[in-house]
Length: 176
Ligand code: NI
Image 1 (cartoon, rainbow, N blue to C red):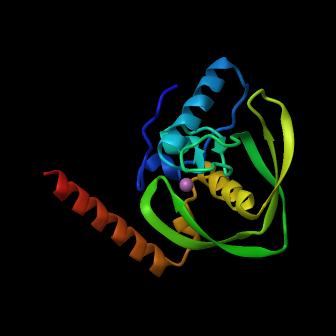
Image 2: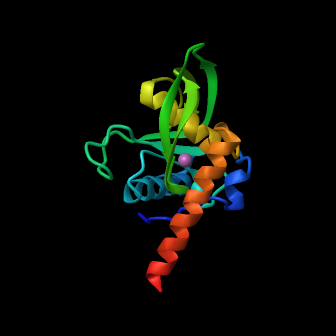
């Protein structure tokens, strides 16, 4: 397995609508394994294929890691599609591997039902509640070129992007 490079904001691949997967084969499964490895290596709970530069509709999520980066219960979602959402919404504190070091509060549906194919290409429907609901909506947004900062106010987004740029500048100066 290989740890892939994570594309960071404002990389153009993050704005693209990703293409559907037509078939699940060994080549795709090898990529799923690499995505999972990359997510754990980055201490993430979710990763979408566009974040590693591959514009296809694939997501990995593991919200059952006992400690960050430790394999818990990984879930693979190929061509995930939200087919139902709860009328209730909730506010959740979110971060993203493509926007390092930053977080913001985002409004999401409290629960969603998602249809998807698994690691073997079998179709399932999952009910995501609480944190899984948030993770699914965050990652599926990535497949449509939407970042969580697109779902907050412009003022908050501008502040967050400024903080990100400041952090990068400080890191670059430390390396000199
Ligand atoms: Ni993200």
